Structures are given as structure tokens and as C-alpha cells.
Length: 615
Image (cartoon, rainbow, N blue to C red; front, side, top):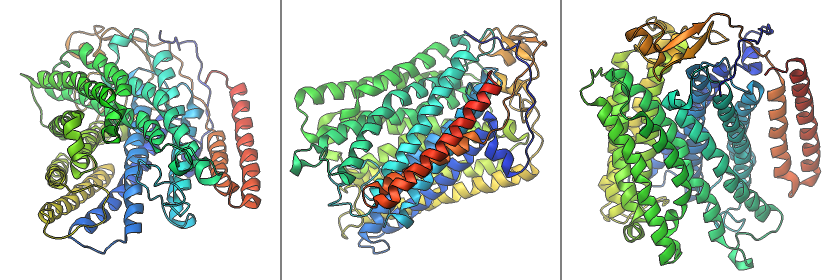
């Protein structure tokens, strides 16, 4: 049921300028921008780490990186791309556009929204500070398999920083997910029933539930790991009666839904862009929406296909193989819906459309290799090989990253009021497409020829030299494509052509307000009558898609220091926990200081809510 906001009255917010405005903001749009910019910076860092990996593997018996340095760079690359790049940029687009697409003035919990961002930033800082304070970065892979994470094999403090950084990132994601769910349930515009919501909103809704149900598993796992490393427990140490497979179950029960957590928002973005640039409705709206729900449910039944090589037994292998093949059905439904949307449409090959088409092609390749990996006999032959690396990147880079670049071109006009350069954008697309396939397609052959993943070097004349060289050249093409995007972004931000409110002739509510939107999002309240309210009003007659309530009084919460203060308290708490076992005279005072800071932030937070109880 949508909330009636017509009785709310505007609360004048204190005006701050410069950096202070961004530090204290609770505006979902500014928070979304901060999410996206921070995530892109981490994406660049993770990309530089990937270049180091490819330089090391570009030629056999290379000594650019030591084995220890390679393991650290390899671990931080995967962790950064998953937890600090793709997930947060998804969160950034959700933060900015979900309220706009449902006709809301803000998120349900603006202060908690700001807290989610600051915990993302502080979690990333904790993890990367391991290079300086931890004696070295985490070095057991982003999957952190036991017993490689024990102090016997991971002798630096890097894995402890990894655990505490992930804890902060997990709290950030959980708080953000609750906020998205409540916002969608409570703040939809009048008339916007669930079956009228934009598909990006649908996928954001499903993704948020996935996070809430998946994160507790890895939270338990990394907490037990921290106790093993610091307090003498033996949950994952086989020599002392622990079970390393327990870690794999806990990790992959989170880890495989995590794939859908990263890809479902991309599905939603593509489901918004394809109809706009085909000038026709999405084919099979209900199938696209409910297949996303099916993917979310089935995603929790397939985790052990990552463990076929651990001798789970015939019954378990059969079940998880069947479940892994079954989940391809709702995914395939989306592919055919997208292709049917294109069929006989008035196609406009703008840059967002090119990235959408590239997404479909690359994701299909990743999906086909994924179905083959669902067959246990084949999986046993290629597990822990570069075939799996290729599959994973075709799904997450060819899928999520292509879609998110498309979303950047699609929504840049709404965020900034300016258009990005189409000419430079198309150069970006084709360079990225070339570089991506040059990097990752040869890795299928490397895997089939037996090259194991996670190795820092290899011998000559094993048939791997040429494919590794191709892959390294492709990685630098990806870097060039990303540089082209950065140049396009900067030029367009400074000199881009004015966009207007609806430059793409789109269908959903975010295009009904100004570009960029005002602080309160909308000057009027829209009453929704169709799935494409703006389009139907333009082409089917005024009032067919939506009508307007002019007696509308938006409410804005004031800026607040409380979220950053509370988040900083948790940030300090992480460092206190890092020193609790090894240096309690440092750790205990840090924990006490952290709790005091968090108390000040929470006390201020509660006081602000008491003064402004509406939000």
C-alpha cells in the first residue's frame, strides 16, 4: 500500500555548502552519487590490481611479483571488485533512482541511508589499511578457503583486516537493504501497485531480500574465522578437530546468491533501457518480474555446486547439479523476453542500447559455460582452472559491468542535466568489447588445457604462453576503454549538451521531474494508472498514464552529522578489535573510545528523530 504524503509539510533544512554539505547530507540523490563515485574509485583500484596480475602472467616464469605479493594482489582484486565496486555501484543507482521511479521524496530512513554509505567507505579503508598496518594485505583469495586462512599459512594480520572490513561492509549492505525494502513497500506513489513498478525497482526489491538472507551466513563464517585466528578456537582447523568444509558451506551459501545480488540489478537496468531504445513495452513484464523472484529463491539451493570436488556424495551432487541447471530456466526466460522486446522495435543504437546488447551477448556466453559447470562430471575436470575464471568474468564483467556502464550513459543526463558524448561513448563500448573478449575468451582454452587458477607463474611450453599473452593485451584494452569513459565523463560534465527533462523519450517517473531533480524530487504528487505512466500520458492521452495532485507538500529531513559520527565509531571499533588479542592495552582503550563515539552519534540521531519524527 502506498503512503499518502499529501498531509506532510515541508521542514526547512539547514543549508550547508562545500564538503560539509556532502558529509552531512541525507538526500538519497547525493548519497547515491557518493556511492557511485566511491565504487568507481574502488573499481579503478581493483582494475590496477588486475593489470598487475595479468602482467605477472603475461609471460612464463615472470618475476614481476613475488608469490606473496601476487597472493595479496589477487585477493584484494577479487574482494574489491565484488564487495567494494559492483555491489556499491548497484547500491548507488538504487539509492538515486528507486525513490524517483516510485514517485517518493526520499528513502524511508534517510539517516540510515547515509550511515550505509559511510560504513562502505570505512570498511574499504579498513581493508586497504592492511597494506600499511597489517604487515601485508589479505592473501588467501576473496573466497578465503580454510585452512589457508589460519595463522600457519597466512602469517600477516591481513586476513584479520579482511574480516573486520567485511563486517563493516556487511552492516552497510544490511542497512541499505532494509531501507530499500521499506521504501518500496511504504513510499510508492498512489496507484503504483506492485505490478506497475518499474522492473529496476522489482530487481532492487529482490536483491535487497537476497542480501538480508545471504549475509548472515558469511557474517557467521568470518566471525568464527576471527576467533580461530585470534582467540584459539578451532572451527576450521582439521588438526584440532575443526572442519574446513564448514567454511565452504558458510561462504558459498552467501557466495552464490551474491552472484545474483550483483547481476539482478543489471537485469533491471537492461529491462529499463531496452524498451526505451526499442520504443515498445517490455515483452512479458510479469515473466521478467517474477523470474527475478524465482532466481532469488532458487539462488539459495545451488551453493554446493562450488564443492563438487569435495566428495559430498552422489545424492548431494545430483541435487545441486539439478538445481543449478534449473536456475538457468528463469534466467533464460529473461533473455527471450529481451530479444522479443527488440523484435520489430524501432531500434535506436545509442550508447546505452549498445551496452545493453553487449550485456545480452556476453551474459549468454557466461550462462552457457555456467550450465556446463552445473554438470558434475564436467565440473570435476575444470574445477579450479581458468575455465571457471572465464565463466565468472563473462557473468559479472560481461553481465553486470556492461549493464552498469550502460546505466551510466542512460541516467547521466538525469543526474547532471547534461548529455554524455555519443561519439566517445561508442568508442568506449567497442574498445571495452574488444578488450573484454580478448582478455577472458582465451581463458576458456587455458582452463581446458589444464592451467590452474590462483597460480603466480607457470613453466614454458605447456601450451599456455600464447593465450596468457592475449589475455594480458586484452586487459590493457579494458583499461584503455575505462580511461575513455573517464575522459567522456569529465568532458561531458563540463561541456555536455543540455539534456532536458526527458532526453530519451522514456516511460517512467524519474523522467517526469527536472534534470537534475530538486532536493524534494517532485513539485507535485503523481497518481499512477499504468506501468509506463509518462509514456502513456505522452502518447495515449493526458491522464491515461498518470494524473497529478497539486496539493502536495514535500517533507525534507535536515542534514545530519549523526550518521558519520556513528559510522566512525564502528570504524574505530574495528581497529580496537584488531588489537584486542595481540595488544589488549591498545585494543581495549580503542574499543571504549569507539563505543563512546558511537553513543554520541546515536544519541544525536535519536534526538534529531524526536525533533523531526516524520522521517
